[in-house]
Every structure is written in C-alpha cells, then in structure tokens.
Amino acid sequence: MTHPDIWMSRDKELDYFVAERNWNKGVDWYTSHFRADRPVRGESSPSYTNYPRCSGVPGRMHALIPDAKLIFLVRPPIERIVAHYVHNVASGREHRSLDEVTASLEHSDVIARSKYYLQIAEYLRFYPRSRILVIMQEDLRDRRTATLQEVFRFLEVDPAFRSWQFRLQFHRTHDKRKMTRLGASIVRRLGDTVLAKLAHAVPYRFMRAASLPFSTPIPQPIETGSIRRRLIAALQDDVRRFEDFTGRNLSHWLEVDGYE
Image 1 (cartoon, helix red, strand yellow):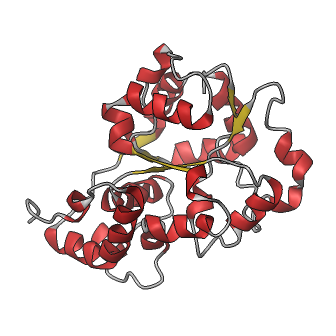
Image 2 (spheres, rainbow, N blue to C red):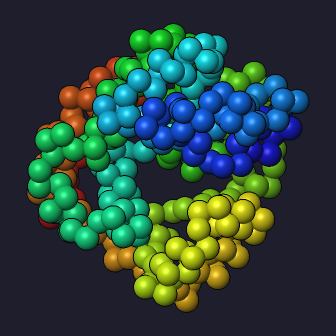
Image 3 (cartoon, rainbow, N blue to C red):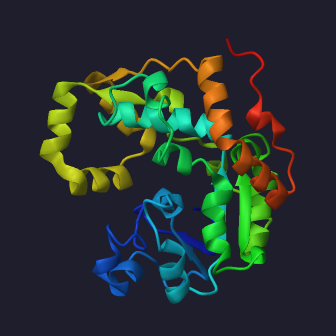
C-alpha cells in the first residue's frame, strides 16, 4: 500500500491467526512484519475467511487486536469459485474438470469460502458491524478512486491521497499459467524463501515475463448452465443473507440466463 499512513505486510498472507499455520510462532513474529511508525498496519490472508476449515480465527484476532478494522473484498461467488479452481489447476493441486469439482458440493471448502455471510457472521460474534467494511471487486475495478477513498475514510486516513500505482492490476485469473516440469523443478530448487525475496525485489511484470518459458496457459473452464444452476442452489440462501447485510442488490450473482 503506497498511502503514507498505511503499512501492509510485505508477505501478503501471514496466516498468523490460523492455528494450524503460524499461530504458534508468537506475537513477536507477527508484529515484526509491521512498521510501528505507521498509524494503520494491516495484512491480507484469505485463509481468515475459510470457516469451518480454519476455525477460531476471529476469536484469536479479537484477543490480540480487539479494535481491528476489517475489510472484506468480495467478487461474485460463482466467479470466485471458478477463479479458485483455476488457481488450483495452476498450482498443480487440481486435475479434474470444473464439472467434476462441482459435482459434489457437500462439505466443500470451495463452496464454504464463497458463502460470504457464513464467513462474516463469524466475525460479527466478536466485532461490531461498524468495524467491518465490505468492498465489491467490481467497484474496486470500475470505480477505483472512489472505492479507495471509501477505504481510506473507513481507516481514518487522508482520503485525498492518490498514486499512479492505483492503476495497476495483478494476479488476474485469465493470466494464470501452469508450470512445466522444468519450471516446477526450478521452483522446488529455489524454495519459498528465495522466491519471496525475488517477488519483493523484482517488479511483477518482469517476474511474470521471466516465467513464461517455464509455464503454459491454462484453458479457461467452461461454466455451463448446469454447473451454474448447481452452484446457485448451494449459494442462494447465503447470498440473500449477505444482500441484507450489505444493503446491495446482488440478484445478478444468481443469474443463469446466457449460460448453455
């Protein structure tokens, strides 16, 4: 984050409040990722909204930071499911088709993470509504300046701040690529630590260009009408609750017209 009053951890996903990941590293490890001279300090960990697989996160968070402000960035849930699927294919964790993945939705993490009210309700047990800001991805994409102003006002920092970096976009789903065997071998040899240092030191566009010879494009999955209807049936009750929570009309999230 380029705002002079905000410090975001350089490691994007600290996963500190997840018991199975970094909770046992202790509070000193966590606070070492932030600059004390910035009035607003934050991090971004998608696993914090992966209930019930990652349970107890809001309670641990509240015990350490009871006055935290929480920003929940969401996209249409079916779009999120497809992006999640593409990400898993890119990382080599998924080899099935989207139809196969969505054939059985009971106890599915993919579905649970797309039930936004289910996730946010866990935080409402510890934090008041006034400390939670929901941002729609389409607003951040199409109305970026106004949306960032809303974020800055929520965080009580200067809302007039501007930066040329606000125009940049990273990690788009259609840009995802899968490593070749050679690419995967190089990644294994370098290890996560070296790659993390490279990511901090080298601009994203150069890192992506350098990786092209060692990766292949991922064909975008075909989202058929039957898949969409299946997902809508699993998500619609939660979407209605989330609609009430946000005060936004989200009926377009449940549309099936135009899909074969």
